[in-house]
Image (cartoon, rainbow, N blue to C red; front, side, top):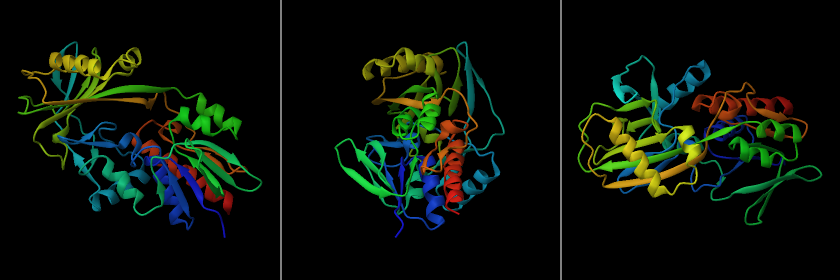
Length: 328
């Protein structure tokens, strides 16, 4: 009996690879350090409803991804989001409509990865710290000292700095992953008892600690009461304030929001801050995925391509394609 394939990470990339390998008839086992799937597609349940703290929306340009997003839409996993979009530059708000089709998970971003995961076997709250090879097979060890295996192949679908540490058995792959610079993002969510009197649903921001803000309930399937907003700090501000206490981050970004928005700003009834240490790659790559087929070790993620949700999905497909090609 063939040993299963281990996949570390249940974000879009890992689940894309898992689905392709499962569809080809291979047994997979997934591992994730978090309590649920999604990675940077995760949503947080809170006292004011579900909040999309990571990826805010995604687009589809590659025909393969366009086709799969249409399948997701037919299954009710995603919906098109048509926000009133604005730009802010030098403190001036201006409407900025475009023809770009934007998609969101429904009723929250994490609905996509939850549906992709389906009934695939997964170990949550399991942080893999070592990937090592025996005479024929791979084994994994977690932070608690537990071992898992044997596995015929391992696919690592984690942010580049974390992937690099797990690729020690393949120095060339580890070196490539370690060369990728991942930028952080501080995220703040705010809720107001009464809706803010503004037409803004989403805003791209320049010349501010913020670079994005959105009215969470403007997205399909989100409850509009209370009025929830998600603010993303710029990469440069986030790097400069990486270790700032969360209460201070909330105060600073709430202040930046109040300066920017075109209406009165009451005190929020709810607030939280979350730090994405590895939010996005600083530049795009054209690797597709990293592979050492002879060893049976692969790595994928948005950092192997465009840094976008689409890039993550395509990277997972690429890793699965390379693995399956080697088995033929």
